[in-house]
Image (cartoon, rainbow, N blue to C red; front, side, top):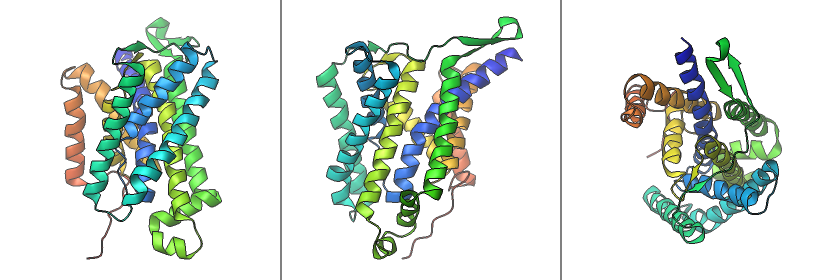
Length: 294
């Protein structure tokens, strides 16, 4: 029982990271109808910025995280303006190829700047741990902070999109860009803000991910990015609660699969579950079927 609880907590913690990353995917797709496959590499950039701020500039962890968020926010706006905005009316295949190109650009730029040698991310979220059942069950501060951060971010985004002027503009652009523009909404600015928020969340996710798995290299965000995209699709891409639920379920399935079935097949189990879900509910758990006029 204690072992199961330990695996469950680890799964929720890992799933919370996936959920935060998935929120970036789901916001961009839900509003701009674009799949930003460079999102995983923005995670990597955020982790490197935080690493440099802590290791080289000796900044406090919180300041380092804020620096990473600022850099990734600007990076997200630049990526949207230079790579995606000119393709707003292009085919989805063109956008997909561009996203892959941006991903390789960020990875190779990281190789040139920081070299391919792995770096050990400093401990920034270790404030002790909670011991239960006579010390058999240990809940680390990293797990607690990650789970709380996921909940706060999800609630904050839900309130932002539902109650603020910019959030309502995002929902309007998501429904119909043309009608939103006729109503005086600046579509370009709205989509840029969406990329900025998603990229800032990627920076937070990068720090949380590297706090749990300290090895940092230019491919750090690739596999977590793919799994987070899977979580977004699993929960219903375009849905903020769906991204959270999808991320949590994916993390739990991955950890339990590795613990009770096979360590080597853990990733395969995750994607197999996604295939099964999409066979029976193609829009995801909380997604809504989209109808296109032809």
